[in-house]
Image 1 (tube, rainbow, N blue to C red):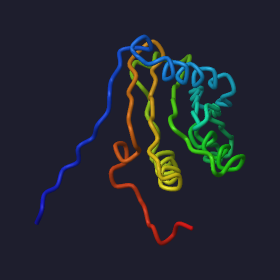
Image 2: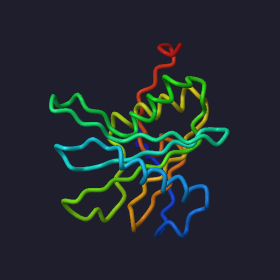
Image 3: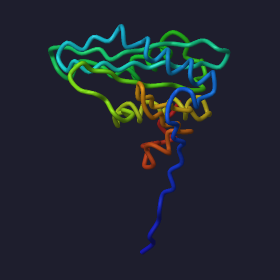
Image 4: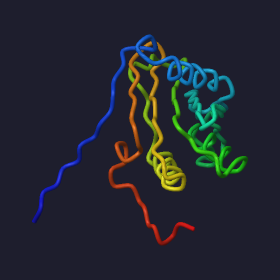
Length: 162
């Protein structure tokens, strides 16, 4: 038997003032994306901003549906928007934030497993890691380079990729 360990690498920032101007702007755009969240059931808004190579930013927000689980997370809304509008686009970074009126969010909200799997496949397709910022409004921000730091046992099957 072999025992193996993962090493996960990320950075932690106390607030927006510690970020680069580019990262700060992306976090603020994710916050802007909260305005289009359709979340009447959970009342938990999530916004995502994707920074593409070349400078274009694409926003996404969570979209719920009474026929649960027909809704979609903000990350996948943004990623699938890019996938259908510009399938050869390269995503350099993304920022994700959340807000609710029901309680105070005190730490960054991270992506669900389904979103991480989609993010991992985008990385695989574009052959470039994505930098992810998990932004807690008025709080800590986590910065992760590459989805394998978030999903170490990512499902990848090279023979299935076109």
